[in-house]
Amino acid sequence: MKINTTRFGEIEIEENKIINFPLGIPGFANLKRYILLDYKDPIKWLHAVDDPDIAFIVTEPFGLFPDYSLTIEDDVEQFLEITDVAETIVLVILNVADNSLNANLKAPIIVNISKLKATQIILEDERYSFRVPVPSLSTTQQSNRAAEQ
Image (tube, rainbow, N blue to C red; front, side, top):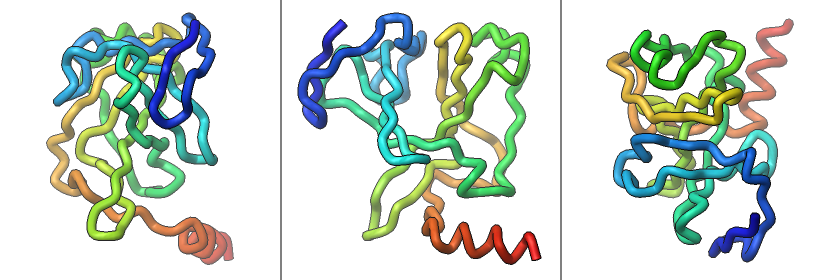
């Protein structure tokens, strides 16, 4: 299947890779179908299939924020039909504000990769906010090296 995008032009996607957001993403409730596109590791694009202008920069948060943790509530597990945590990935949306790259750790996206079904949740955990500066890769690598010593 081909989709048009404003960022990448026309791209070919496999229909069996489309992730369904039954509730949409807050602010984009009418867009239910997205595709995850690799960019520069660990960055990916979550691109709307049905709107060429809508795409989110996302990443799995655990490599950049080693202390990040969350609990997927039972109702979310049921909604996404999760039977094994190994079939899930967690993504956070990245954005640029005040010349800084930030991660939205307060509202992660949970994806059941075996069912290709996802939703964005809002955590009640006060440790996280909607704009957390992303450490630079070199800072992250230095921290990892220091921890290993």
